[in-house]
Length: 193
Ligand code: 5GP
Image (cartoon, rainbow, N blue to C red; front, top):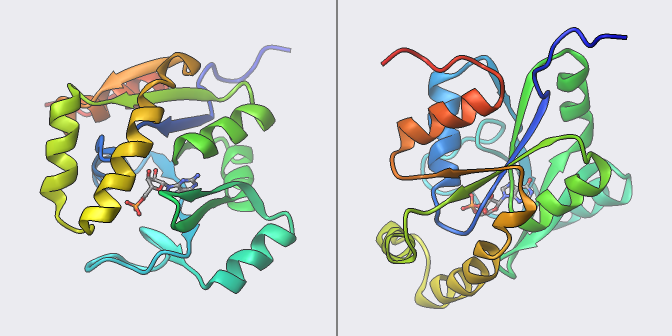
């Protein structure tokens, strides 16, 4: 039977620390309402301006344990050796069943788990224009301690090597341009400039 649409319904966006995945997904949230952006659960406390249910579901460690124990997580990981982050399976599966264009912005460990369970998903690697630029962005953000920054750089080096596991690479040289390329890879039409 012919499929109703050639659009990939599930796209996974991953990439190294501080490459700007969050910035690209925020841009998508603000400019592309046709993209269904998954809201992850996390044990990390909210940063200033982050809203529960919009940026993340901020949950306690024991609530996260329960979600994992019930099998409610499509994937989950400890990121930067600190907090847990996970995608809630039911919300994603429902959005896919409704034919929505679903976007997961997750870390590499999570992307690998999704690759195991949903190998036909569209895997997009967000790459920095250069290593120096990535370090500059990480340090410039100023929201982490030096120890946390060092931990994130270590993670980033390993993550950069994973590009070949992905179907496509988008270079985050400019947020709007990168978002447009991502949206095109999702089979959607980018907004006119
Ligand atoms: P942040 O704490 O800066 O918001 O996010 C830290 C990292 O967690 C980012 O690399 C982001 O991609 C990742 N992340 C966010 N949500 C999820 C999730 O649901 N699953 C996984 N595996 N990683 C996530």
